[in-house]
Length: 318
Image (cartoon, rainbow, N blue to C red; front, side, top):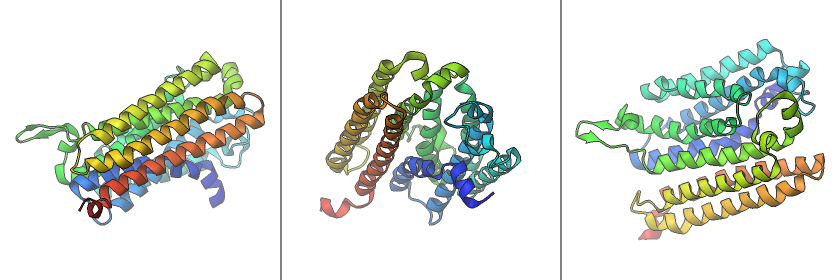
C-alpha cells in the first residue's frame, strides 16, 4: 500500500473541501477569545484525522454496495487494492490523530471527540433507510465549525463554551453567530450531497439506496437544492448582519456580498448545470466536477472574506 493509495482512498481533495468550515470556526473563536500558538496546528490535525476517519469508515461500511455499482467497483476495497485489514488500520490511525489533537487542545475537546465519531459511523447506514441521509452528512460537516469554535473557546470558558452556564447566569455565546454558521454549513452540504447522488440514481433504485434523486427524481432534486441554497444564504446573511463586533460595517460590505455571489453561483450550477447533466454520462461527470469546484470555491471565498473582517479591517476603519 503506497502513499498515493492512501490519499486516493480517503480522497484528500475532500479534506481541502471541508477545511474552510473548520477554519471559519477557528477564526470566530480566535477573534473573540484568542488562541495559543499551536492551537491552529492542532485544529488542522484534528480536521485531517476526522475527515480521514469519516472517509475510511464510509468506504469500509459501503464496500459491498460499492462492489455492485459500476462507478465505484474499482475503488480500493472492492478491487482489492487495499485490504479490509489495512482500511481498519488506517481508520485507527486517523482516529488516533483526532484524539491526540483533541487532547493537545483541551479536556473539553477530547471528551467531546466521540460526537463526530458517532456521526461518521451512523452516516453510511442512514442512506439505507431514508433520504434524510443527505441531511445527516450535512450535520456531520456542520460539526466542523462548531467543533473548532468549542475547542478554542473552551480554553477560556471550559464547559461553559457548550452549556452556557456561568456563575452569573446562562449565556450561550455560540448563539447566534456560530449557530447560524453551522446551520448554514449543514444546509450547504446537504444541497451538495443531494446533487452528488444524481450520479447513481439507477443503481440506487436497484440496490434500495434511498437517496433523494432516486426517490423523487430530477425536478424535485433541483427544487430542493435551490431551497436549501436559499436557506444557507439566509443563515450566512444573518451571521453577517448580526452586530457581533464593532466591525459590523465591514461584515455588510464584504461578507454579505461574498455570500450573495457564492449562493448565486451554486444555484446556477445546480439548475442549468444539472439540466445539461442528464444528457449523457460525460455531461454528468462534467457537472459533478463543476459542482465540486463551485462548492470548494465557496468555502475558501467565505473564509477569506471572514478573515479580512476579523484580522485586517482595523487600519481601514481608522
